Amino acid sequence: MIDFHVHIFPERIAGRTLEALACVSHYVPFTTGTASGIMESAKEAGIETSVLLPVLTSPKQFESVHRFAMNFLDGPLLSFGGMHPECADYKEKLHQIKSWGFRGIKLHPDYQNTFFNDIRIQRILSFASELGLIVVTHAGMDPAYPDCIHCTPKMIADVLDNVAPQKLVLAHMGGFQDLPGLEEYVIGRDVYLDTAMSFGRMTDADFVRISRKHGIDKILFATDSPWSGQKESVAHLKQMDLTEEEQQKILQNNAKNLLTE
Image (cartoon, rainbow, N blue to C red):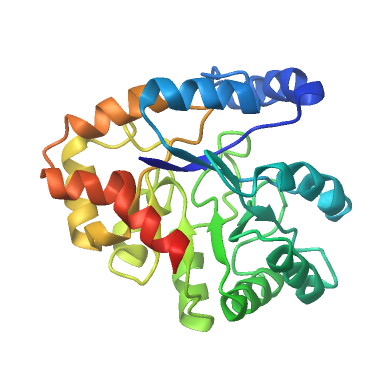
């Protein structure tokens, strides 16, 4: 099994970082937010690979974040790189990320204070596609910024019309806490949806219906650990009204295919 959406932090800052994030999001973390913490969690859940998604909250973090991320280029912890929309030399930065061996990047419009349809994000998506990089973006409301949604389903649709990125993964089933917008603008488009923080926030019946309508081959199991439990999320998915083949596609096959394209 593959968890396509996990966060960790260096040991020296993990504790205070989780404390700060828990305070603004009102979520209780399920792990220590460290490499050892997620390894222990994944083993208990039976997860083979956890995809780490670093978030740059400033362009100045580019070097330090990737220095840490390069410790996890292969194996049970597989890190992507990160990009910030304010990186002026975005093509050079994306070339570096590709040359270092990363298979994709993470964007977080809320933490980067940039709307998803901003031209700078569209340029990053376009050039990342040219390089064959996967792009994972937060989508929908973020609990830390509930009053301003930087990546709405409508923005996503506009960007898909303008750019048509080849390997775009929308976290939180394409629009956290916005089921009507998801169905109107995103379902059926050529994008992947990850399941992070979706179980229990939409009904199981809605999850199954939306996954089939969008296409099971485009659904990736994900937890957003430490903000939901890996073991608990695997158990939740397995009790849904999905066929064994559908479960296997969501839990592992779709992610393996995407990572090896």
